[in-house]
Length: 196
Image (cartoon, rainbow, N blue to C red; front, top):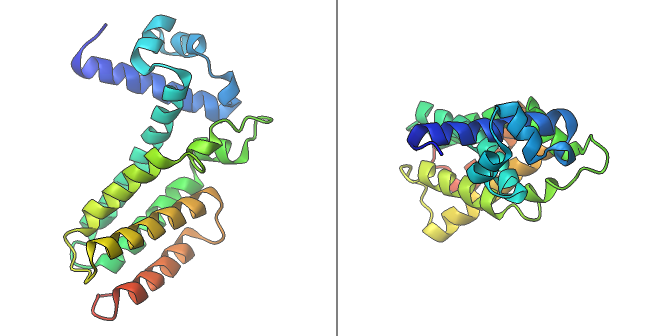
């Protein structure tokens, strides 16, 4: 077994292959043997790197989440003094990425028959995903003076993350429109003292 960055790289290759296969043919068609063939390793190596198929599914979803969170980081880095501009840019960016995300569309629409096994990872069993996303948003909002208690901040973060996840899965408007709507709500919650 490889060590250090090679092991990480191999795991990433396996998870990425699983994502591509799920997007093109459905989660039911993803097998450890097929991933092994795609990546050019043994089936046992795939098991060693990712564990069970359930663990692979979670790694795949969390890998996609990392791409979305990179967009959030970029938005907050671009607006260090304006929380509303940062939120607006983060929401818009995330929803734009979601719009073009083939894996997300495959999971949400279950385009491959009754292949809905992954959907609970985004809905009823989304604890890991929500925890990671809320933790990142809490970190990114911490430098801003929101005028809220930690408990109130947690409520705002929870509402924003759940709303964005809902719109990522089933948009009801454009990314721009949804971003403006959430920034408007945030402005009312945070009060007039916050720059818009």
